[in-house]
Image (cartoon, rainbow, N blue to C red; front, side, top):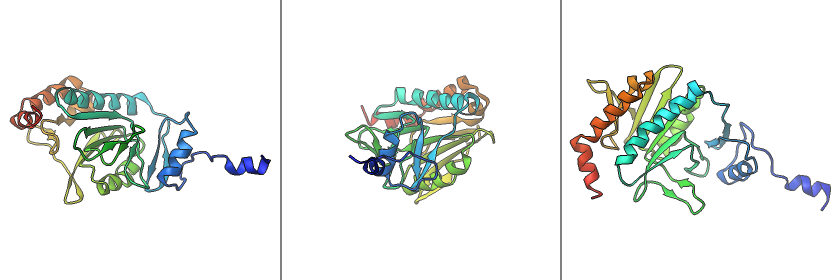
Length: 224
C-alpha cells in the first residue's frame, strides 16, 4: 500500500467545532479512547474541558445520589451516568445524568448498548458550559421530546427544571415550601436550596416525603 493511500484512509481526529453526522462522529470518537467526553450537538462536535470536583464532580455525585435513591424504590427505571444517547442523525449527546423508563418508555437500548431515542429526564451540571446547556442542548432535547430537563448552574447557584408542554419547555416552579416536584415522575421531589447548599441529608429527606405521597404510591402500584 502506498504512503498516499495510508494517509487517505487514516481516520481524522475528533476536534471541537467539527461538523459531522452521527456515523462519522462515532467512527472518530472510537479511535480516541483518551477522550472521556465528547458530544455531537446540532451536527457540531463539543469536547469537554477537564472537570473540577467543586464545580462538577461533587454536584454530579449529589444528583446521582438523589436520583439513585428514587430509582432504588421505583420499578422499571434505568439511571445513567455520562451515557452516550443517540437522539437523531445530528445529535449524540453524553448527558451528565439520565433517567429513563426501561420497558415501554420513549427510548430503547441498541444491540451495541447505547441509548437510542429520548430519555424521559436529563440532567446537566453547567459549570462553564451554561451557554450550550441552556441554548443548543435545550433546543435539541426539546425537539427530541425529552420530557424533563434539569440544569444546575453552579456559578449562578441556581437550578432550572423544565417540563415539555405542547412541544415547548416550561420552567417548573417551587411550591410554597420551596420544593420542585417532577410532573413526569411522581414523588421525585427536590428541595433545590438544600441541594445547592450541599445539604444532601435534607435533599433525601424531602425525596422520602415524595415517596410517601399518594401520587407516588398510585404510580408504583401500576407495576405490582
